[in-house]
Length: 453
Image 1 (tube, one colour):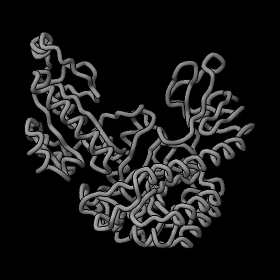
Image 2 (image 1 turned 90 degrees about the vertical axis):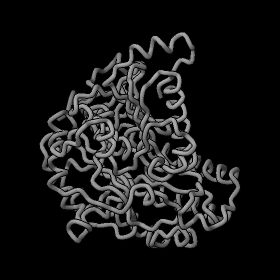
Image 3 (image 1 turned 60 degrees about the horizontal axis):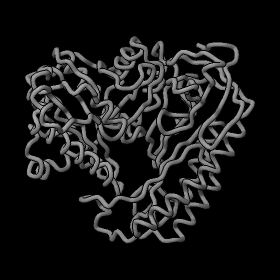
Image 4 (image 1 turned 135 degrees about the vertical axis):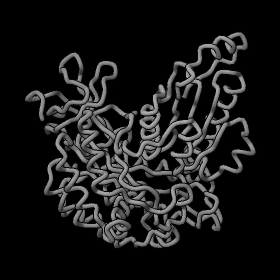
């Protein structure tokens, strides 16, 4: 986030040097928000605005904050950011401040009352109105054209908006609305545009991938979409994020086996394992069905990396529930796992329940699960030593080039580190890497057989 000077004698100087058509877009929250900001930036550029993402130059006259309203910590970060830029406007360091995204969708009346110095609040589906306020036209012809905030070799690829699932703890339907799929034709066009501009990896995202197509095609159509996307020239990896377990379309696994450029990777948030917690969470499944599904996925796609996300401290969670979760995590040995402390969200079904697990207990349970997972990850990584993997390199930091295997997503999963003084690789390229040593979450290796296509 941009830091503004509060010194009075700099205000006049900075006000004079503001670029009147420059927009600084600040993004908070998840990958879906990243895509929304990239689309916004693409529209602004097409309207002849200068636009930057989280600029540090302090010369933009307009700031647009794309907020998150998912859980308490994210909401507070969004509020703090709005206040910071509203104060910057008061100090003459920016001319206009606009707020969009999930927090604005969910709490607009309260925000307008508490932070009135913002020039406008916009919801998650009000991009045309925001552009109109900026005296810009919404250009319908810009299908798939956006300014990437990620390195150009990978991009988040949103296939649908909103969610129809009834999960008791989740406020996303309040902020994002009902599920709306993009058409296969539109998505293929978008993928071709990204590939033309250097994108090699699509990280497919939605609130729930498995619901894709039910509204447009009257059936779960993720498998057909994957086949079409895998045919796009230049796309070498397609990665699946956020698949709901209940009603999971098993034909997706057939496509994963058929197509080399669909990663053996599946992000499936399971949230919990005990029957009473799953029922209260309104997940539409049971412990045994969950266990059976994970086993079926692993049987159909040997070697697949399954990432899951869990919740600790949901209302009514007992010590026995927690212990049963630990036993299941230990038995299942997920390749990737994260866990969050439960956040009591207004207007959700679970908000009517008593938030009866103390914060310290939530934190302790979260740490216990992650400590267990750390050991599992270490054991699984040790088995990779001596093996060779295709690695996509994302960046260079210090003395290492840093990349990922097909089993790892950026920011959240394991990384492969190669010594820069020993091996040269180009960021954005693939290389074969033999793993020489491994830690809990990092793999170390050396390039073999040069570059790969």
